[in-house]
Amino acid sequence: MTGSQPDWENQRALLAVLREGSLLAASRVLGVTQPTVRRRIDALEAALGMPLFARSATALVPTEMARELRRPLEAMERAALALERLASADRDAVDGTVRLATSELIGVEILPALLPPFLRHKPDLRIEWSLSNRLENLVGQQADIAVRTARPRQEAVVARRVGRSEVGLYANLELIRTHGLPLSPEQLPDLPLVGPDRNPADWTRLRDCGLALPPGAFTVRTDNHLAQLAAIRAGLGAGLCHQLLAQREGWVRVLPDACRFELDFWVAMPENLRQVRRVHALFAFLGDALERELANVREDPSR
Image (cartoon, rainbow, N blue to C red; front, side):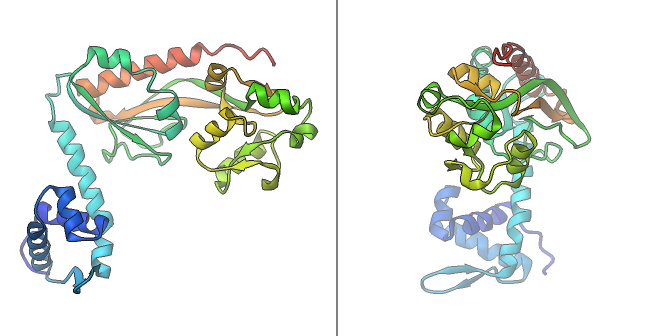
């Protein structure tokens, strides 16, 4: 390796080519010309003292070293974006950008209805919304705020428990009219069911709450929780759902005493962002809004 220090713009060019597969596609993503991307790759190779691609007339094939660099480059990109967010506004100003991370289900079905009042009063604030079931590293600045159903385990994180949500087995009314309401776990296989596909954690959850059924007992199987919800909504089967969402849809509770569990909702942010007003403002708003939403879920009359 040579003594020259690799430049971040050159490293960004490498990351873009690794993601996009060609110089031309990378140039479009970066907003520069194709020759500029080539020059940056050449400069990076010179700084590292090794080739990063095997060039041919028809393809640009990354070397093993280039492929190994992708993960650290993505970590550098996340750090650069976090620095950009922190610098995008004054610490005392409620504007700029906040990166909000949550699961797909919470991000699509719960949070959107809560945010309009906040954004009406904070028109200059921008939200980057990261929807994933992967737990973001708050301390590593992969997100400014996270809303999850598991307590954050990292140190240097401020976490607020905002309530508890009961999860049970639900079906839409038409499905129950067609197939009847099971009165015991033994009758459950007579009802079409929606469940997980290959996610071992979800299968464990089903067994723990009384649904020790084989995969063949489920009419629809998917590990995507949004897809499960859509299948229940379409009447393809009964499936696990938050009581909050099921009551909104007017769904019927199935075997309420045999199948249920509770999940705590948490809002968290890195401790070092407590004094950044835009982050703290959204953190406080989400905590209060979710607390009210979860507290307003009425007692299930079927229990």
